[in-house]
Length: 171
Image 1: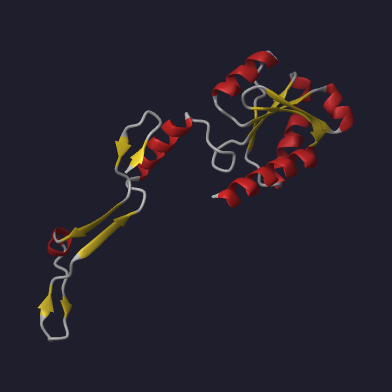
Image 2: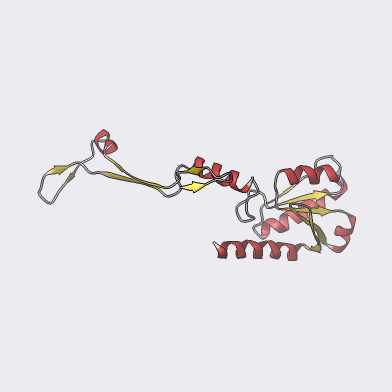
């Protein structure tokens, strides 16, 4: 039994004996007594149904998945459309480090892009503009508003990969 975020209990894992399916599929085996026997099936579901497991996990984390599990780990936000090419370069570098990244190149103000991506619970927001291009850096912001600072792209990629490694070692 697993408790969700508001204290309700859910059964996830089960082990069940099934007499029905072997009969429906007319399954048989020859036993040591040289007679035909109907087997008994054992169903094992350590996390229950995948749907229920994902629902409990999503509710428990409030949609704010750990970095290693979240579908998008980073969103690159160009300050304006003239920085889209640099944003694509950043995306390609991060993808080479196996970091799941996307670009928010909508024709919106930076503040709106930041708010929208905060609502999507993307763990890291990377803002790029003129200073970042000049210095080949990114301005990093953690989900929740924490300003991580300006850093080289490779240093940022290593930071994320080390964070994922540390999280997985703790499991």
